[in-house]
View 1 (cartoon, rainbow, N blue to C red):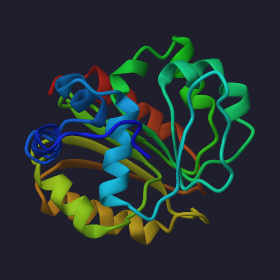
View 2: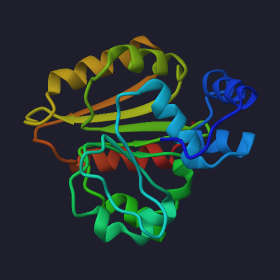
View 3: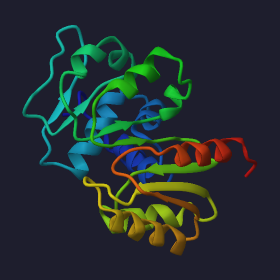
Length: 212
């Protein structure tokens, strides 16, 4: 739940920044002078009102086993990574992921150590390329509307043809949608299960060192 109430003026500005400017909850919080947890709480309360939210913060913080969503900070992710690593998370969403762009930093190490079935990194800045490794095709309207905004962007997508967790046919369907919406997709299938093959690392290195 949000920690503080918003005036109608701030609520209107919140919705404008969220929908028109596509800002993250943390960026909105800075813009209108509220806490990041309040902004995140309003996003969840308005668009997922049935979700039980755990705000993991403060000196007496604890995880709620019944929560659908747990919200915390990068500082606490780093400090409490051993506690957070004790459970398998359905998803890990990293808002303002530029905070972990240094792979040698403690917070980046903490973010990568948390066990999660999939991870999503949200950036305020426009990426120069995207990478999808063993991804799958969920919620087509969301993929399609997001892809439309990234037409022309370079994208590397890889998937094992024998993946027992995420079907290869779903990866092909995702590839076809991305191509249809104008992304420059480099599709790398490989004869293996749910893993990252050497050929994928080779293509990733080529992508990172090439010019847009």
